Length: 447
Image (cartoon, rainbow, N blue to C red; front, side):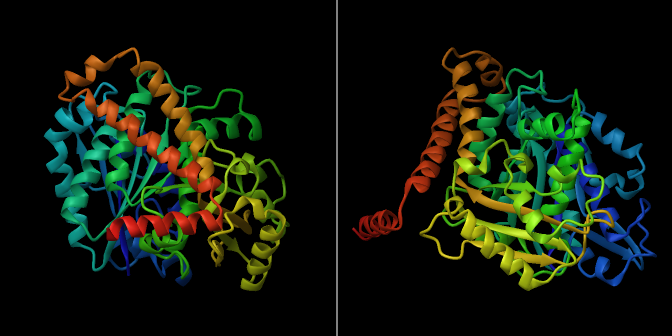
């Protein structure tokens, strides 16, 4: 068994993870008290990937809860899931970071990092084959962005052979009143690109549009966005939790979906999102959910997949269908939408089948997850907001006073621009150009 430790950092990370745990508890037939007396063999076959089992038919999440102010963790302890998390799994600070990345990474974070690592080590000691860490956090706040990066950096030092898959929530001006979010996001991305192996983009901008346009909510709240993200995380991690070979571990996911170093961002679409308004979804065919997965309205990342090209992608189908139908659906979408994928990486769109359905309502669903050059739209949006403030040095003094050097702003902005340029180069590349480019790189390295 390959175990995963979930690390939820900051207010957003803890609230989002609560929805994630709620979703996978239902999928695996586990009650809020950890009992699994009515779960099937299929539900329990890979349950140890996210849960540890202290005794028969009793399962508890392998999670560390971190926040530098107590509100979000107090809410979890007072909820129906409170009994699942023991007191040694939570690390609670006294003050908070005041939405300042530098405080989360330097001053406040340094005071509490050893407590967080002690909790993580306890989980790691219970694992037989620890595959990696799943980190859930926001990029806009101070704790999620700053301390989230600090945790990732220390984990990479202490567990260099383990994978780190980050689920960062990108900020949006539509649902936030934090002015310095672009600073926090760009500074955090610079560190994540150094320490995280997979960056699975979750975007408040896209989720707000889904709630407003598709679900007809007049004033979407953070609770609405977190619920959608929790369900999306459950879909993205189903191959870790149920029998499947294609992307059964984090390392296989990284190997299949990240073809080049320096482009670790994955974006996903979720067929259920644009089907939610339907009264009867049990009749949907595999062709229907495949088309829905390629619908721009179903993306949980604020980028239109039609504006870029996939370097690599996977489509995970859940429900009652056959491997042949999956293969036929993939071939059909490649024939119809070949411009969505680069031609110089053969067989870069893979499909797999997870037989465990999402629920009795969702008898068949699909999640598309891939490395697309369209991610530039999200990165450019963040970079432009950052540049608009930093060129006037607005709010910079709050960061330097917390122990940060102003050159870190310059380096972070330059690093993000490099990633955007690399994605644009890969989008414009042809098979002949890529061959020439890497021949020149090889000659330069040999010289």
